[in-house]
Length: 129
Length: 364
Image (cartoon, rainbow over all chains, first blue to last red):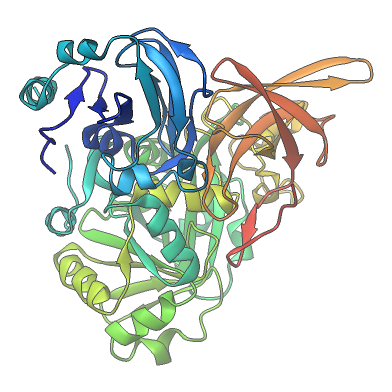
């Protein structure tokens, strides 16, 4: 799967999409789900929680390991994807469709400091060495 | 890394390959959960060629095995019958767990674990030199092994190997027969019916592809582990090792302490008090139990502790399960706590196996 050009990325393999209404949708990348394998549990932050950038805020647990998810930008949690409670494997099926939570950013411009698709691609290539 | 004769087939089938004890083996072919369900409901196949078949040949075969195995090969009187046993060191610790087949009075076959094969051979050669110098101990690295498991496994094998049905449909559990170039054993590591088939390495790829064409799904190490855990089967190196007594690893049923046969490790077992047991846990909360997590429990007169030996997610139960080495006082139905990623989570003690014939045996 190629890396979607309309998203921003972190070194810790989260993706972010800025929506038309100004909220930011967050998930984990195809690379991350591939490394972890079949997902069995997802723990999302509570709606209303205020997060700092890089704060640990969610956990995705696969058959193989549990991985912490970090807030890519600062913001307040406005929604969580309740589908993932009963169907965590949706992350494996389509990592870019299976969002974890949405944020109201403190500052939408923070997204510009994140990696773009090309920058994330470089991270992946350097990891392969 | 070492490779089996099915390595190319795994790559062709898009397996995610991993280093397993120095062998490049398939972890899964897309989804280990799907592979697990396929074995429980239909048929799946595992490349287990990294394990080692060892032929024991000579007049002293039975004499030798009576000495080095904790289970009693004298139970094997019918041709092809197999026995699951531990091989112990003089301190009563487990060198390996294995299956031994009685073929003739002068020919037994053992199947040992991949990670311990070299150690097992070296140990057996040393014992052989001391007590049965004429005996041949022959590692069979010319052979491959494929485990076909599931309620439809045997039927699929019969579809692929012409004539095999007549030869094997009356095989009992834990019995094997040689048919054509196939050594077919009604054994497995999944808790399902099926065959483990030993055959020449050169023929393995064709056989694998023929099984695939007949509808058997390839299954990797990930599914192998979740299946055996549900079935309550020990994994060497996790549930026991050279420092563990079989009596504290849930394997007392495989140790013959009743007959007057002397075997290596017997004296040590008779002298050592048993203070722990291997028992099952089911997590009552969301999360996954994993090896080495600490278990704590309250009694009327104090606290106790133990450790998880094997943990994981049970796809059939849709909940996390584990095997744990706990104090003897604990019994099925008790609740304990497990430290899982900085949180104390509640778990219930249960007898294992957790799953039989594809169905849960546990209420929680």
